[in-house]
Image (cartoon, rainbow, N blue to C red; front, side, top):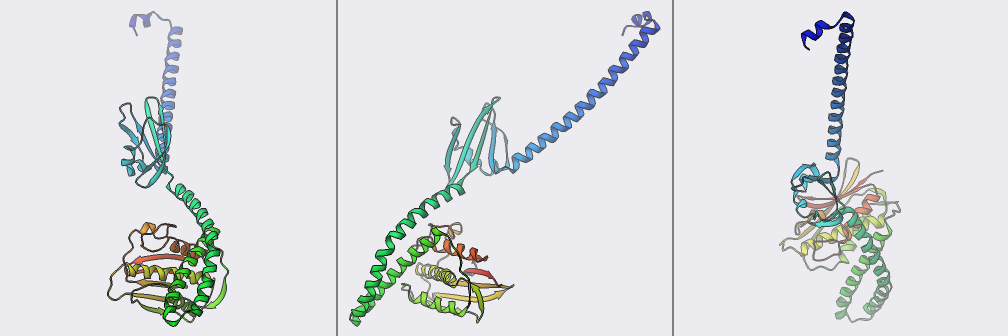
Length: 339
């Protein structure tokens, strides 16, 4: 301020000016403090938004006017090739890429393009599975009656056949039994698994395994070793028998695809940490795709409909147990808690 102006002011004006300056300085401090708080809140909000974006199960990209990425989250980085497949002229559509399904949404705002891609593969699979299950259940019902009639007729044919022809009828019966297993498994899978637990000796399951082996049609000279315990358990015997049957047939099919000079299947029961463990070993071909092992209606084997292992997993789960597999040495195992 000009010195001449200050000198021309009287004492009252100087006091007023001084007071005004003090108020101005005070307001400056208040504004500076509020700006600091506002800036801290903004940074805190920005950090929170960034954290939310990072934990989203959706891939998120933000592009500038030149379609260059200016922001993307971790999920987007994991799906970098997906962005190249997205059509920016569309606003909302479904995209299939590398066997996965995505819902893509595109928003243009403030000269920025926001793209989100949500993986809906599980929902699509469940939808397809429900559809396939419905069709399979209908077919199973339609097939059941004629198969029952054929089974009855083959039993009559066996009793009336000459000795030299009986082995042919036996092969027909084994083929019919296979169809019946598929029909029954399909109906059980579509209706849902409900256990009917009762107490029985584990050795009874050994007999069931031997009967299953004798009723299956295979050409390899497979050596079978079955070691079970003299132990009483409470479970659904019929359903556990079906699980072991599926695991044995899975091993036989794996061996039939392989040329092992000494094919062998070994079934061993043991107790580990208050749980019953039954392992089914085989030296057949290796598991081709671990992700498809327990997925319904999908199989990498030459034989099978892709339902046996999926149904078996549901049965063991209903017993509060676990069904899994190990690659070295190759085996499928089921674990049941001992009550």
